[in-house]
Length: 467
Ligand code: PXG
Image (cartoon, rainbow, N blue to C red; front, side, top):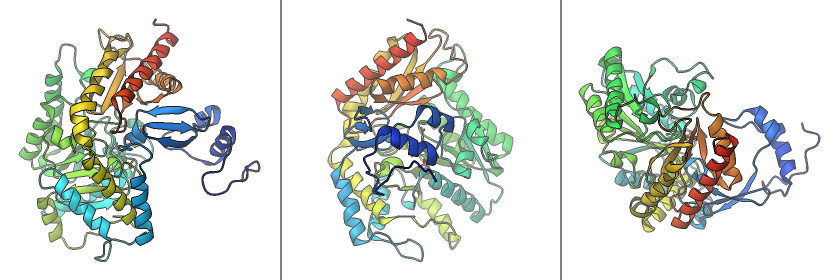
């Protein structure tokens, strides 16, 4: 027990000072993906509220959230309709399960709405609460699919370096981060990785993005042949790799992946946790890149993160096979939670009614991409890349040769801090500054986002004595 704990009300709204919150946090709260030493030394940024696209911290500062939380608050903050949907559902039916052949009404409605929204024949939804759980579900059901088809050796998953698919054992195994694999002795058996179509950092000198895209797609085919097609269950990929540094594939990459998966009878899984629900200017990234997936993982923007909900969508064919296998012994207490489902339905209704997808596709998306590309004149900026309302600014040591900083990550972290001090939150991954603002962002706010980002990059450059 912390003897110096201030008295707290238990409502989460106790008016303590920043220092008091930081002390409690330092003493009791374990953060994901954060060095405890940094929490101890620098203290936590305490966030007390938000409205629209702006967060407010405990010192009363307004910060433009260029990350929509963690790539998820797609409608922006303060939408009363979503709060009302949650309240109404909590008073009507706060919980009932989806086991034992029962289901709450909003859960059934959400499954049918998603079936209509999703591309192709992805007509069946299994719900969970987080992207990680959804991917774990997918891994189990893909393996079961091949068992039922009497091809039990098809068990290995191919995914990519710098992929992020979550933090549970299977999801982190699918992910392509060595640092994550080092925690918990991962990857589990049956998970292998190939190179991503990351031209800026991995393309050879003189190699075009398209040539690199083909090379990266061929790495998938080579891996299938190395393992043996009879042993490969699925290829899993985000249409655009988000947390790995917004890696946008060239146009020839996904068609080649699709062809390869069909050729070797390998299932294709699209992880749309970030790219789903409007981020690219289409409802799904699969539509942007013409991908016909057998499974799709969804989360985040499904409810604009106002309530935790995720799921996997599967095709009629896949569900048909799974249905032949009898009971599916898999599920979570919160699978299809009615409050989350009600919030998701209201979120989707608002997105449709306000024409948010069209707005991102035709107006704010192109404007965002154009304004961000103005930053390419900066000596520290090697590349700006992105689609719709997702983008990255890659900082480099040498623009001409595309030489990255060594060690990677220090300059990115510094720039992230400097941007925060300038009043805008990006996400630093290596030396890549990622942005994925609420889809409700306005042109004026985009101007502000870019101006503040430039100020942060300028500060970083002068601290590096480059100017
Ligand atoms: N797939 C993708 C593509 C993701 O981006 C997950 C699965 C896992 O979702 P859950 O709900 O289990 O977190 C994600 C999550 C970051 C960051 O720092 C990114 C995510 C989560 C947390 C932090 O960029 N993406």
